Image (cartoon, rainbow, N blue to C red; front, side, top):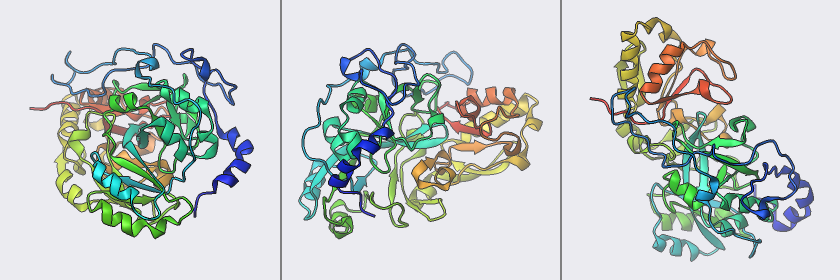
Length: 423
């Protein structure tokens, strides 16, 4: 279904503005001090974790070389120029072109020349691990990006001022339980992943869950301009998809954002915000109606392996994670804790799907094969769980994040969060 026209969006703006839920104001700019719909979180301050998100542990697990929390820094360290008031006409966000690396300017020019295309916006786009899901984060020219969002967000200077100040804007569809009690969102799985203050909850663009400015994108090691938002204005996107596919060639994917779901709507999965990204690969995928996805077979052949590991036996995971999983389980056995992991309650590793089989919730990290679920029956979401904390400590030494540490817990879940070099 096509998105509402701008005139219809303007007519409903008074009601839709209630969706905006700006969090409490920081003191960085008078522009941020606007009337708020909700004010449930504290302002950003020294607790905001900065520094690069890469955290390769060069010593043995548990050594002094293992990574710890990054040094604090304020959101202002990641600020860019405030985009100011809305300028220019609004665009419908109809199509998304994406790849693993920067899309050449020549391709952008050819796309702009396709009949029916009214606007093209380069974006940095990637999947960032957040509490077991891959959150789709976008970055780019904020003054132009706002013109592709829904009317109530596009017209709000406060939303874009907060993002320009180094905070993150989050789509209201994202579960509030991902936000910690002080109003921060940890963008990444490791302890060194930046905790970024949520500056606004605001409707964004379909398939995009959060927006950050370019310094934050660099902090998360997001690829530069690897995506393009395409508007076809009043023209049906289906009328231009054929010519667009001819322009972009086989190395890029093309998604129709106006569709709720389409079985042929291929996407690209690029993992950022974690040092494991280079180990696990980038792939395109095709979604299925049952909420599962089919990654590119060439990526599966290159990265997914079935192997035997202690305690669990045969597992199918990403080859980049298997050495650390094996090392953690070997240490569990050496510590005399093998009976604390129940092989019959193993919930799997490589399971390509959306969170809760819902495309709107983003990809599960099981799609990359870098997460395992252990002792499933006694470790359900939202509980403290029964996982032996000595086992948890061993997995953490081997570079795994544990879902039991999250604000909304998932104690069965362990995911590869950092690279630990093994002999």
